[in-house]
Image (cartoon, rainbow, N blue to C red; front, side):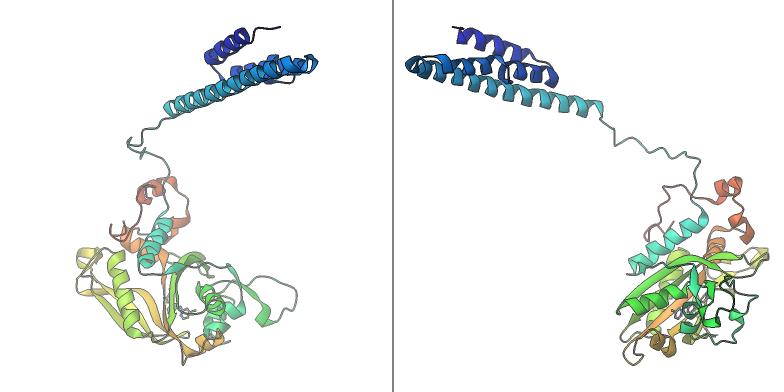
Length: 360
Ligand code: 2NL
């Protein structure tokens, strides 16, 4: 009969010298597997007389438990060692400075949108987006834009070709402003609503100061008891944050839009001495955005009761405010994909906009 102590000594020695999990697994199979050494001892018990089987059985089972415990211990030891090796191997130095010299640049339009999101986000606005191809209803009718309004003319708006003889109300248009997204939001959500909508817009216009595709940001606030004071406070705060000038003069001038009543255009102070334009205090004014209290008819068109809810809205061109802030002289250069232009006017990925950093 085999010497159990010798078997145990042999197996324990092999287990403690196993240097990989794979080697350990081979030892386990050789000892406890279907045709393993210890398994063989257990199988052999059946042919022993009852008395001997009892004492021998207890000893073989003790051996089996010893080996299992030793295998478990060795497995933990090897796993820990493997983890330590990986941690050492894959260690990264998080204190290394980031690699800032990259050829990639953030386009000024993207940067400006990120800045708008940072500023209005801090004021509690969410960002909303919607389709570029719109129904006449969302782009014009819901906004109280009458059927004969010049903006609806073929020469100003891109109409999509559709089935022959499609009724005027069913015509699809490339949205001429981002307002349809606000209409959709008012239909879908209950007030209070505080959103900004940055995005592409399209008008059939192409010259030195107009591009057929350009970007707008509009804002919408709807709640009970919203008034012109909220509009003014919000937009003064925005202008000062965006241009990073704490005492920037801001002026509200009466205006007209079909979708707001009353309406106001917003100007900021500037000076034009010596040919150059400088934003800040000065003798001149520069128009930068349009705004107003949402027209009661627009609220009603969206299913809101104007006696219960009011709100204000505003809109501005992103190219225009980006050109003013970053001194970009020509609108057309935004879309030329000129890498030298992008290297000059673009932003590094690490120029993260934030409100405190003057959104720069
Ligand atoms: C401008 C002026 C403006 C709005 C946009 C708006 C949207 C809804 C309801 C009421 Cl859904 N108003 N938008 C209001 C006033 C001015 O934009 O000069 N944009 C470039």
